[in-house]
Image (cartoon, rainbow, N blue to C red; front, side):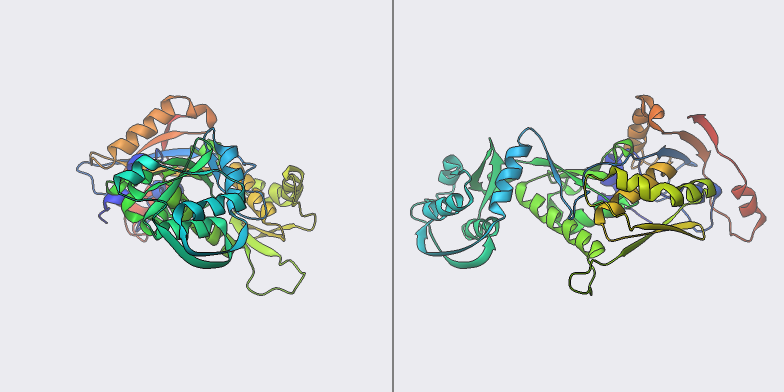
Length: 387
């Protein structure tokens, strides 16, 4: 399989490298191949982390967190712009239309006059017309600005109306929590290919996306423009709603949602089945579910609860108990070197004490499952160089 530029760029930015199933790769399971061919025989590096539960993303709906000193001001202003109103503009100067929206929301919205002058936009001579019924003020503002190829950024605790090119130079960092157990590589690929695909650094753009260090939890940190962040938030909130919202439910009756988690260790499995409900409910600031149940079904735990927050906490606790293995297949191929260097740096600067281990395992092409070589490979143990 030949990796495209996006895959190469993503591997170079995420210190765990390419995610693979640790047990299958070490055992040499038939059909598993390194993602890129290497000139010499590559080896496998395994980084194991126990992502600790996070208190974010435990509400009734999905939410992201802006990173930076303007977080509180931005969240307050965004909440105000989320209110729905009816507005009607008839040949209204752009300046007055924006002022009306700002007044309705109770937020500050100013103009970047220097950038607007560069493209010869006169906010008093540019007219706005449109009827907006039961729309959020943010959506109305986006419509008004979009008609004149303008954009907005949040700077110095206020929204600034500017040109699209000027807005592209202003980025913000936002943390997007991810449900424990999610394949973050696949999620990164989904975002990069469906949201402003030409804006990411993997294809020459300025936007960047990376997974947080595993020990800190599960999620993505994204550097992008305000407009692209709105699209990402909409995508992830929509996927989250699809996961937790029942298509058919009786009015006034909350559906009981079900999730299953493979747990290989029988001791962890039995102990979690007995104690997980209490651990989650005691940890939740709200939305606890005393009626939640956890049952052992084969080698898995089946969790049933009406609370989204309970399920999120349960997934996080189980991930922390079992640990998550990330595998990087190393070789001389240049596409592997940056990720390998990042992994080595992470290991050398103290992550070992946070639950990581590093193992060097020579790579051999997997033999067919029925051959003696496959059985021999499966019994080969990795040599551990640190724990």
